[in-house]
Structures are given as structure tokens and as C-alpha cells.
Image (cartoon, rainbow, N blue to C red; front, side, top):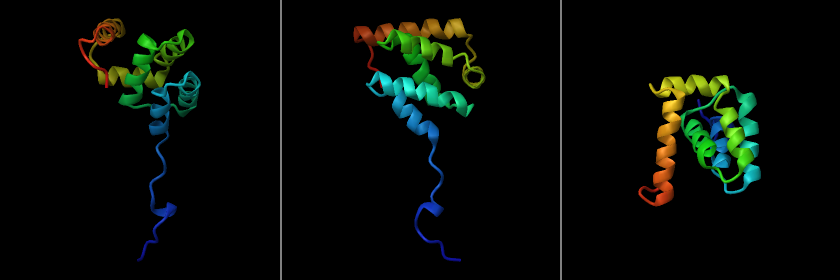
Length: 111
């Protein structure tokens, strides 16, 4: 059985990969669109969770911080967060806030 090269043999594109790139984009409109695109998917992964947490804590745009915070309460994100960390939400936010402060003061570098 010969397989021809091309789109038929390639795996379908991962929508989360593009959403993650857009969550990290410097343009606020792209970040907002990424959050909007994530909502109907009803799925997420750990890099998406981390990007939303960073946005909720430190995005320069107030509206995007609020949107990211709301997204962190979506069922698919809550379930992922529970499976990822034994810490409760308030403990995790406190630790992430400390890390954001360390990044801002230059003690550590963000990825």
C-alpha cells in the first residue's frame, strides 16, 4: 500500500497550538481572540493553563487580565488545574503572584 505525500497523510492541525501562540502574542487583540477561540473548544492543556494564569496575573491590559481570570473558571480549565496541581486556587495564585514579582524585579527570567 503506497501512501502519497500530502495533507491526507498529515495529522489534523492542533487548534491549541495556535491558541497558545496567540495568547502569547504582543498584540492585545490577538490575545483576546485566543481566549474567545478557546471557549467553545471545551478542552485545554497545561501550556494553555500556564498562559492564562500569567495573563490573569500580569497582562498589561486590564480587560485581558479579567478575561483570563474568567477563563480560568471555565470547567475544562478548572478540571485541568485540579489534575495538574495539588494546591488550591488561592495558594496557586499567591505563588504565581510571587513569581511574577520576581520576574518584574529581575530575580528570575520568564520563558
